[in-house]
Length: 463
Ligand code: ACO
Image (tube, rainbow, N blue to C red; front, side, top):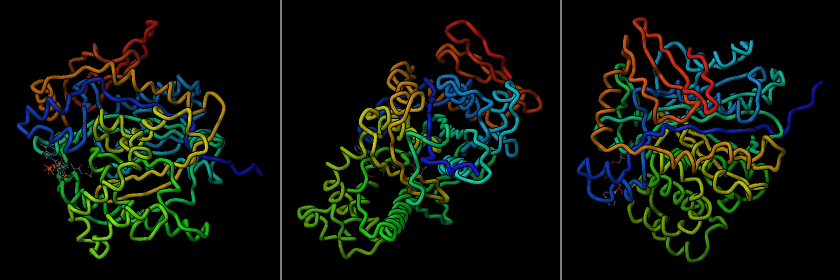
């Protein structure tokens, strides 16, 4: 019998976000919001968005072909492909099938997996599926590939600055630089109407913003409590934030990440964990008798716990915030873009460290899970992942839109959503070489894509 694969996890990653963006400061002024609301209040710097030539399928095609090429992976070596997305372009045909031409070209049609959907959680479901497959008796020795892809857009109003867009691809297999601690995993699932998309004619969600914030924090508490219980049963000792080197959160906007981390410290305080010193105890003592409902509403607790958490936030959370602050909420890709930011920032010092991730999708589904970072060989090591992702360069070479042009683009996209029989502007001047773009949706709703010529002049076939 073949040996049980060890250290199953993420071997390689690549990230793509549209080069078109708007500065939050500019949007804030345009929307007539008070100065600092989007930048300090929400904690966001910039927001990426798709123009009429990009969508979740083109972004996925771009990121998958880039990952395979840059890590030298033959498409024949992929045995499972899973996509997480909540951006519905077709109610039946999966995004995964749109990616198949990359593999069909090489004679590989033997690839399991389809799409997973539940708001921002679908990517985590896809990731768990691939990891579980490699660890299972059905594994055929090939790689899994996970794609998280979303275009997060909101109607005009307070939620609009919390949009964003991106696609992330992750190659899954054994002996990975990013491996799962599979026993350290806890979930919280419930039925709530905090954010949902019942109107199939619109890309915009129905969102109860305040409720979604509370649901997020309740799910976080519940996952953390279950995870602590599981750890304590397994290891026979208490778990606290001190057992984790870095935390990575699903990031709708940075302020919620700051509040979430502070909430974990409050949990540690309530559990009398060793991570809480005397001065922190003193600051949090006035809140020890709040009911949990009261604790979600208490502004004083929020302030006190954020103050206690600040030094830990700076070392354990801040390194994962770059891309989410610069690109916005990328729904399913958001948590993995945060994780990519950590690798980008700290790749040379991560070996041996533990990272705890919290994935949240409205409706709701959530999981907290632990990974370990390991020293491995090229091409699948942390430094190579950081250099392939090339995040600084991608952020630097973006084009900032003025607000009027951003609003006009949103209007075009609103009008085009669910539409047929149109050709796009085909303007790919701001796209990097090798980027896929949408050219046409024909009278039968069939979508057609092309690839911008790469630097050496080769032009891939559209399909
Ligand atoms: N300077 C500094 N801070 C300011 C300013 C200012 N001029 N004005 C407001 N603020 C602060 C507020 O005090 C608030 O901070 P706080 O939360 O610490 O109190 C913050 O900015 C936001 O202001 P609000 O008035 O609370 O914002 P509003 O209610 O208009 O919208 C919301 C925020 C609800 C997040 C909205 O953008 C939304 O609905 N977004 C989509 C839902 C979402 O992302 N939910 C998260 C989980 S679910 C998911 O991932 C989709």
